[in-house]
Length: 151
Ligand code: CO
Image (cartoon, rainbow, N blue to C red):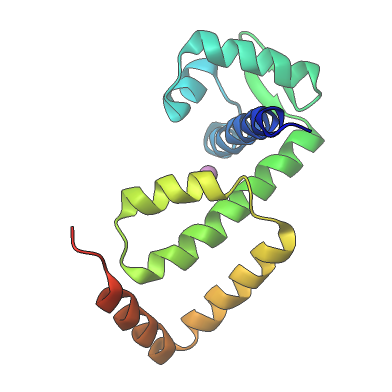
């Protein structure tokens, strides 16, 4: 398939994952996700949120009720939890290297949509190993600092 179409698909699925990720956070915090809160979390308009949430409802990923807020279906919960797990592992790994927090967040928000389960497993094991081996972490940080490009 032409790359352009593939990119559009990827963008679409990344957007769906971002919604499910944030709706999952809101439900954990409040029990439901309101359009206004989703809009704030994602930095988009309430009109865009309403539009997307209706589509997610039609796809069976959320149940949208205008006045009671949105909740996740079983499938929506599964995808939301998976994105959050990818986000968490990537953030934990990168968090050990003294990178700027905003850079880590922006990079993780991109990578979380593309990392496969087998790769995530490797990164999780690597993170756990680094955490149990401070000397290795210190050595890697020193190497990274020595290679840091001038600002
Ligand atoms: Co994320």
